[in-house]
Every structure is written in structure tokens, then in C-alpha cells.
Image (tube, rainbow, N blue to C red; front, side):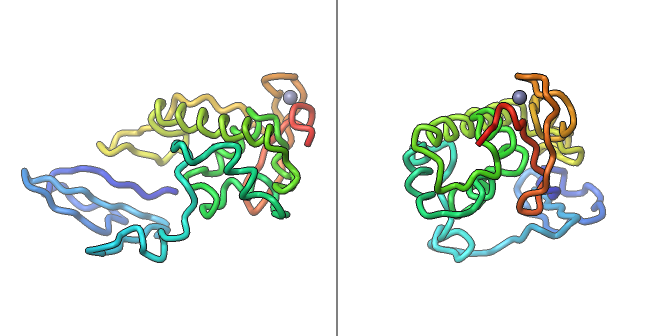
Length: 198
Ligand SMILES: [Zn+2]
């Protein structure tokens, strides 16, 4: 969330919360900074993908394995809200809170809808929306969190246009009604009750 990696000269002074340096040739290091200590570093010499933290992860969202059929099949009998379902790393990795809010708005699906009740057609739209939102974010260099920095230590995020996240109470960009803000799965959730009816 708020930690970062940056490439610095090996004699660059340490800042608060710098925890690990990976040393390279040419007097540069990859420095891991993690103020909230949500990150971890693991040394493993073989079968990396079989590590307990990785072995049960879902698919990559920008891979061909991730599509509406995948979401539809994984969601049958699931009573979780669809937003929690797509943010669950056992389903698909890398769909954080901002991206989940934006993708559900784009796909016109209400975040609280039960995952197991959504049709294949609507999951096709949602998978496409997730890919589009993530690709836009990558193209923009990240999102808009104030403490994000790129690999070079410069602020990385600005350009991504957010339609719903952080805009509760403001006008929907499609219909003009006020967006609703709720807390779902302990995360800020914003949607349009007119454009996202179910
Ligand atoms: Zn609307």
C-alpha cells in the first residue's frame, strides 16, 4: 500500500523506514522502504511459485486466463459481495480498492451485489472493465495516492481519472445524481445507485 522500492546510489543516506538494500554493481542499490510494515521479503532458492504466500493466488488480471467466464465460474455459490469477490487475491490478484470501485462503475454493477447472482454476460463486462482500468492506471504510472513514488523516487501517480473513488456525494459523471459512499469489507466504496442498480 504505502511502501515502495527505489533505486538509489549506494551511499545515499537512509531515510526513516528504509529496511533492506539489494546491492548491485555500479554502486546502486534497490532500497525497500515500508512505513506501515505491510510488506515482507522472503529468500527462496527454488520453486518460488510454490511458496505458501503464492501457491493459492488467483490469476493475473491482464492475462488471457482472466475473463468473464473465469469470474462467472469462480463465483457460483458465492455469497460474498462482488466487490469483495474481485478484491480477493484468491480470485484475481492486483485489483485494489480504487480499481474495484472504478471497474464496477464502468461495468454498471453495484458493489454490494452477491457475486453468485451475476450473469455471465455481466461478468464479461466486468472483466473487460477491470482490464481497461488497470491498463489505464499502468499507462498513467500508478494512481493518485499521495505517497506513491516510482522506482526513481519521484511521485508517480497523477493522471488517472477517477470517476467514483473519493467522490462520494458528488455528481455521477454519467447521470448527475449524487454518488453514494458506504463501507464494504472495511473499505471505502462509492457507487451510483442509478447507474449501478444491481
Ligand atoms: Zn449515475
